[in-house]
Length: 134
Image (cartoon, rainbow, N blue to C red; front, side, top):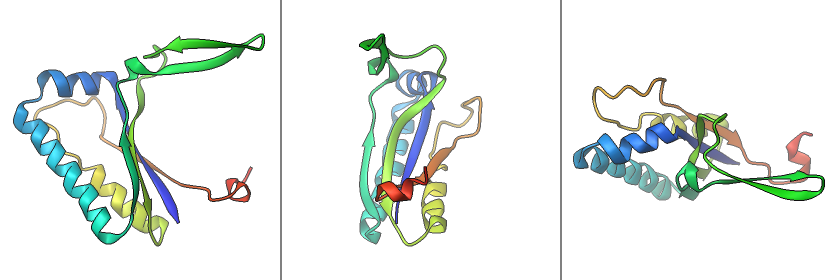
């Protein structure tokens, strides 16, 4: 079964990384992520992963009277957004949860106030329309 592990963050989080984290803190983050991904590749559970660009580069598309309306991000009503994801293919939801729990332990500089607990979301991927449980 495939599961998507979603990393959430705010523009404030991203600004903090680029503005106040030291080079050593950023290196530690990259090493952690690299090791986490490599462990999944070695176990055969890795499917795909991508980081996403800053929320300022997002566009929201809606329709008004049948015509597309484009709104550039970031969006004032949204604090946290999807900043990246990893898809894994593993034996169980429990195993996917174990993998995600390691990611929830992503390092950040000591003394940094995130304003909340660091977390990731996980959801099973549907392989067919029937699995969507609509």
